[in-house]
Length: 269
Image (tube, rainbow, N blue to C red; front, side, top):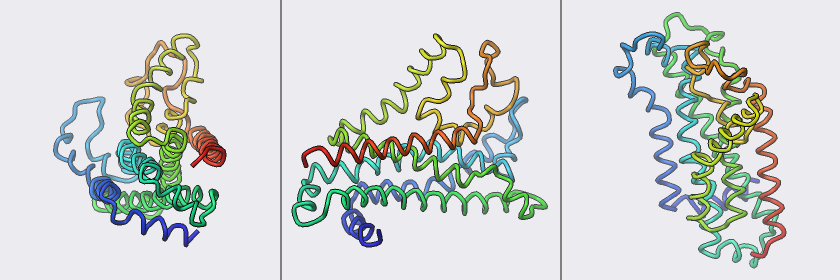
């Protein structure tokens, strides 16, 4: 694993796209929440005071929700790039011709997204704790860790989006086409499918679509408030319980990785 990760680092550490997106995520993800500190300080009811954005335990949810936007854009794009760029530059074929097995090549990409997920989760954890400590009066360790497995949920969020992106990259292989379909599905197609689902079935099964399951790991926190943000015509919650979202994300991520592996092992290089 170490050797494969070192090889990937040598390939992409000087890559302009990899460095730009990685830098954007590292610089924006920890601090973008602070931009709203003054803008939302006088919100009317039922909106909460802006203080809840930054104090324990709610800071875990608001910081996680920001990641729910940045991860699919930055890390999802990178998961596609590390595969599609090798196809377009013919380095995938070259690596296998000179001795790397197909399994080793696939595992190098899988280990790469796992590593990016770990780094992103560490960044999320450290930034959330620091913001919470600065803005919470009378905090203690119990209050800091009162987060409903937020750290695990954030890690699964990263894996969920990147495994989907990785699957598409191995299936489509064309960088631009893969990116277009990835964002089209995440932003438009699945929401449309879910609306059709609700129209015909009107039950909570609509919550179990892949991207929605992943998104519900770190949903918009205000959606958890009763009455104000719930459609009274729907006889079900608009959010999955965290345990269900975690279980479905593990299931979908495993399916995405399995499909990516099978596709790569069977197709020509």
